[in-house]
Image (tube, rainbow, N blue to C red; front, side):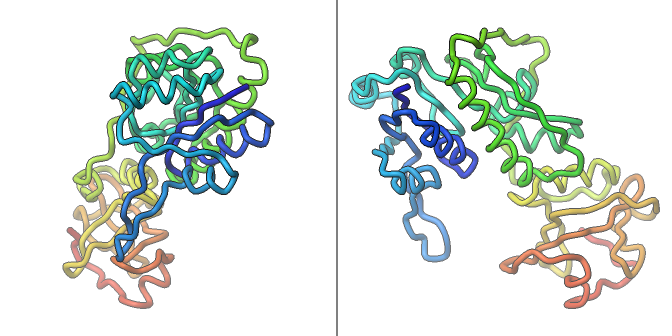
Length: 301
């Protein structure tokens, strides 16, 4: 098929690579414009942009698709279908209707659960037993379109980072399957009554509230790892907690209960497994404590 691919972050790269490897004609790749990052604020292309150029594909990075010129340029590609994966821009009706078979999206949840910007984070934080990737036909609503195919995976103790990498590959494979036999997949409408919303992670959510139950906080930590990272303060320094396990102990919320760095929560306690100091690489608990042991009885903020 003649495809327009639209994606930006690492999550979208496997889909581009697999579609290209499957022999489809990638007419053009759309991605978010390069942004400045790092200490030197160097202008960097998105992961999808960089991989597309490495594959020898044309890349376009419009700031918006709402103007007539951008829409005309999109339509002129005469694509059979557009494949979208975490692109980051709203697609207006003119764009949605331009390809012969419309636009298909890889959404990282089992729809209609977790429509919105942060489906993987929210599934982990909520304690869902499983998640997945849904291939859906796009319409103007937020992740409301009919579904063609769903692939599933258990969450278990996986972090958002681990699930993101897994779902990127699963979603890519599912899209390749669908495009190999598009007419064989019957679109199923979503049940709006079962829909939940996955809003973008707010910075304020990342601070750990030790008054919450330990089980919730363990999921909170996993759901925010590796980015933006749940954090607490110790000696006026922000420490990210990237992995933790629930422990059967009790104390004042935020209190360090023993030399193993067990921390009391509103119910129960947790023990950090992986932490990260500001500007430093992530490290396991033993390495963290060797550098700066935390006195028993300290109450963390």
